[in-house]
Structures are given as C-alpha cells and as structure tokens.
Length: 424
Image (cartoon, rainbow, N blue to C red):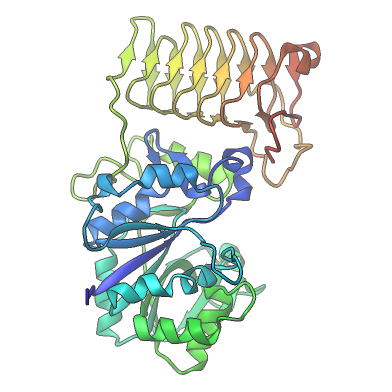
C-alpha cells in the first residue's frame, strides 16, 4: 500500500460570483492573475515548494479551463506515477448524481481517493487566494502541539473581523472557542480556510456528519471536532494573503504587483510560482511605445503607452493608445488611439480604434452595485466594443456589441450591456 505523510486537497469549485462577468465562463481559481498566472497557480506552487507531491483538486463550476490548465501537472512537477495532481470532479454514482454541496461534502465524496494514500495528515486548501506559505512549517507546528486539527489564522483589523470565522485562543495558541462571522468579535484571528487534519480525525468527522445538508468545515466539521474534545490549534500566519473575491480586491492585488517594492514579489528565486506557459515569442515594443511601472506578458506587441498596468500574454496595443491603471488579460486587442482607464478586460476582448473606457463621473451600477463599483469598467471574455464610443465608470459589457448599442455613442456610468448568454 502507498503511504504518504501528508496529501493536499485543494477546493477549486468556487463560482466566484462576486467577480461578475469574469467568472461567467470559468471557475474563480482559473481567472488570470499578474499577467501570466491563474489564481490556482499560487496554492499549487505552495504545495510543490513545501514538498507536498500529492494534490487532489476538487472542481465543480465551469471546470473546463481549470482542467486544461492543470493537465497532468507538469508545470508544478506534479506529473508523478504515484501521487501527483489529480482533478476530482463530482461524479455520477449509481443511485444518484451529487454535486458537491459544501466544502466538507466535497472532501467527503473523495474519501476513497484519500484512503488510497493512507496519509497521516490531510491539508485542506482553498483554490482562490493569493499568498506564499510553507505548509511544512505549519505541519511541524501541528506535530509539536500534538494537535488533531490546526487552522491557519491571520490577524485582521478588528473592524473587519466580523466578515470571518474568528478563533479565540489561549496563550499556547490552543483554540478555546470560535465564532462564525460574529457581530461583536472577541478576537481578531481570522481563519484562512487552510486546515491540517489528522487523517483519522477527518475521516471520522466526515463519516459521522455525512448526512448534514451543505456540509461545511467552518459551520459543521470544526465545531464537531471541538465538541469531541480534540485539541485544535491556531497557526498564526503573518505574510501576504489576499482573498481576490471581489472585483475591487482583484484589481487592487494586481496593482500591488507593480509597486516599486511589491508587497507580494513574483520574482523571488527560492519560492517560485509555477504556471502552464504557452511557447510564445518575446514582447515587442515599437519606437513610439512608452511603458512605466507595468507587467507585460510574453508575445505582446506594444505600439501605444502603458502606465501602471498589468498586461497579459499575446496582447496587441495599437499606436497612440493609452492604458492606465488597468488589467488587460491575454489575447486582447486594443485599437489605435483608444484610451483605457481603470478597467479590467477579460481574455480575448477587442476594443475598437478611438474608443475611451472609464470616462466621466461615477454612478451606481444598475446591474449590481455590490459587484460593479469602485469606478471600474469590467469587460467579459471575448467581448467586442466598436470604434469611437465612450464608456463611463462602474460599467459592464459582455458579448459582441454594435455601435447601435451605444446611444449617442456612449455607455453612461453605471450602465451595462449584456449580450451573449447571461454575464451576471
């Protein structure tokens, strides 16, 4: 029988609905980040950098892009005969087909996969955070405390604590109580959704709670284990960690990559972030081009001016175009003399000549102000915006649009045009 000390289970089924049109065709962990990466590259790279060579990736919502990206795990050196990376979608069972209904239910449905490796420990990760963490150090902490469960926590400002699961600990870091999104938090140690379980503890809890609807770690499994009197410990993490769950936090995290001294450094030799790379030619900059404080992906051709932006691979930016404070994902084409300001363009977007994005004053989004805010322009995958139109702030475009969709050649701030399917 194969024996692994610790295997990782990476939850990558999230729809990421707060990213609006960016996730209408793909799971949140597959969304591009930092020009050449996808969000899931960060936890996968953390695994390989921490010496974990067996990772189950649990997919569910729109998994195609994610499955193609992960493949057999070659970029992360996870193409192994024993272990390696395995994509675990929900599968048809003979009696009924079951979607994963909660984070812990997804793990429960894959007990057989974990059993194959008979691990001592199981590391549970989420596929949608940007951070670097050595899980081996966390495992050492777990062993030193003879814990049954160790939960990674991060100090957050007290006023934000009510958005998280909060751990209350004694002076040995042992968890005495925890509160799920408390109205009046008594601690600022927020759960990061990263857990190390002793395999026996995890298995017993999942089997006991199997019939619980929407079985979830924070709501069900952790409270159950705590009630059994098992020792739970909080492992405090003080590095960079970002939940890129909203358009604003996603935009912000990309912008932080181009700070003069970035808080999150993609260039560190000893902790590389691995990704699937296409064989692309180098970037090309024409003599009229001008670039300041930006990341430019391979294969891109730049004829215009770029300031403070993250540009993906294979992007063409036309002559006299000006890009500021924006994220432009791979395979986009920006026409000549276009102006793009504080915008997020998903993969394969085409912007016509002379078109201006992000003009005028802000107005509240008529589509969904909770998602589309902060003055951003968001354009969904493979959308087409015609030449010489003006687009305001807090706007959304999805699909192939025509000049006739823009009354008076404008899309006012707060307005949206959703064409192809449903891009909400």
